[in-house]
Image (tube, rainbow, N blue to C red; front, side):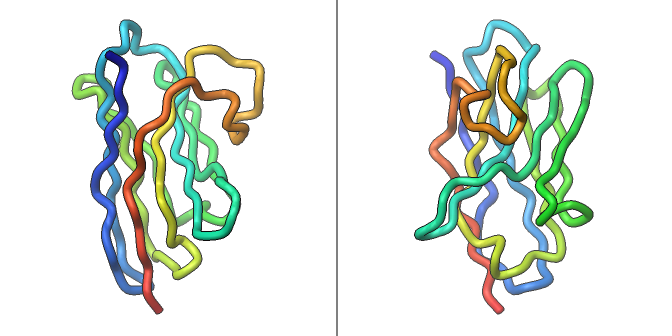
Length: 125
């Protein structure tokens, strides 16, 4: 059974840091696209960061460039999102996603076939 499980969310003050993790299981291939999305209350889901599991290509939303870093540990089947200099506008539910076929822009949710249940991040001012 294919599964993505996020962890690491929590409540921090502005300027703080958090590290999110996503553990993947049940996938027969390590090749694919992985990304972090987030959804704030009352807002649409938005892409935060992307990584190609085989080549390491990475992309970031403009709003998080220089503050967030996406990384992976293929040996552990884990995806990470290191978040620093957090702002109240970073508050939301963060989701891990994985796709195995292309055709869409990295920030388009249709690129991804599998989604985790999310981990909540709250940044207070």
